[in-house]
Length: 542
Ligand code: HAS
Image (cartoon, rainbow, N blue to C red; front, side, top):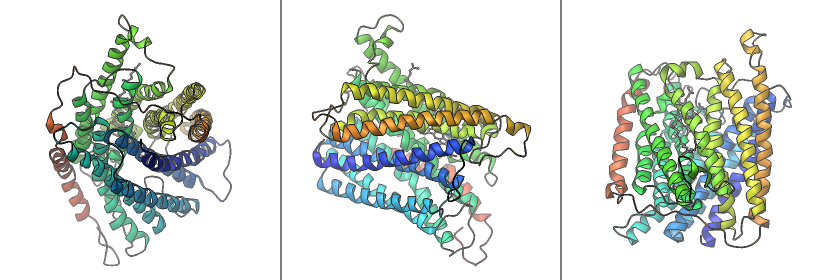
């Protein structure tokens, strides 16, 4: 990757590392407070650190890491970024960073204790919503940079199949651009006027609906960059090939179609939305599981083919031949294994009857720590072990590789304890997002104590792993020996069929995506607006 592009990527990674470190510290505090091992100083409150933890980890770390990775991937496969793309990338970075600083200041000032989902009726200082708007605007500049670079490559190479990883980056951004429409409408037309006092009422169910229209595809915005690494990077690390270029592209396109019109599965217990529409969105939720099952199939195939090519015999002999001592493989692989129970948990959540049991319990927190906190995070760790030295003109030493494996193992161990305790105590009714309470010594609440301790123990392992990760990242950025670290990109298998051209016809896929969204959302949203009470100041946005 060209030096100028490396700098752009690295700027994003530095913010991501700072965010995960500070966010992780808040996470540790969170776990210790909930298990009553410590009490917070009076200047801080439980919900405030919960907000800081959620925003720094789930919004800031992920978004900055993802753009850093995407710039590097696109520059590696389509050539150095054009001046225009690079400029747009830097503008995006600056706007996003200003937005992040303002967001953090607002949270620390206790002016935005509204949790990372920030929907009504919780209200923050208007500056918090303006800061969020800045972060989103920044991502639009960043998305423009990447999509422009891809479009220029296609123009310069007519009729050719685009590099798979660049295609995947663009698909992820298409998903992001369509998804953010919901949150932009909510922030601009509902939250900002309401928090400024221009209107004194807000349509709560609509604000939640617009949030979840965005909130569910948001989780795939986190997941798809991990899939980019699973499909394109990992096969090269294990000296294999991509099982099928078309399958990989189709999986990403299916995410664009099915990841958005499904937000109601977060609102199954909410009144104001009729059963029929909830049912439809649950059906579509089950459709969005399909591309993940396709991914599991393709990855198993890649591993088996590569393991057999390395001399693995018998039913499982190939498994032993995989490069277990290489952190570039080990970390993402650990993420994949965790995604099996994590995905099963998602399927449980999406099932209407079972959702009644787990909704708003700490089971859900366990679910998203396994998905984004383990599957995605560990894959991102695995990427940074080779990408940071690559961008900095350094190499990962064997020692760092081995420490990286320990770091991954400690993270997995901590996450299994913490998330396991969350899942089990969720089934015992332990609520999420609730400051510790004994409910006047109620028998049910008395069962949760041991699990809360488990969460604190797991959280402490996670923090130890995080410190090790940050030390290794500082080493790889500034102190590792100079040299050339490989940026692994696998080729597609020649046994697979030619990729059909329709898979790169964006108009078709974006058109179907909008049709599905309009179908799933138009009538329920019209209902919400129609049944909204009139604002008492005579003027109200919905
Ligand atoms: Fe979820 C709540 C349903 C996936 C994140 N989810 C959340 C929240 C977050 C989140 C953050 O339907 C909480 C939001 C909040 O604060 O309220 N989720 C699903 C479903 C899936 C799913 C159906 N979620 C994710 C991913 C996330 C994520 C991914 C982040 C990255 N989720 C829900 C529902 C709720 C929910 C409800 C609301 C609950 C409520 O009531 O509040 C699916 O996408 C999952 C499909 C995945 C699979 C797994 C495929 C496995 C693969 C690995 C293969 C392994 C290999 C290695 C090859 C079917 C690809 C094998 C080697 C060996 C040796 C074994």
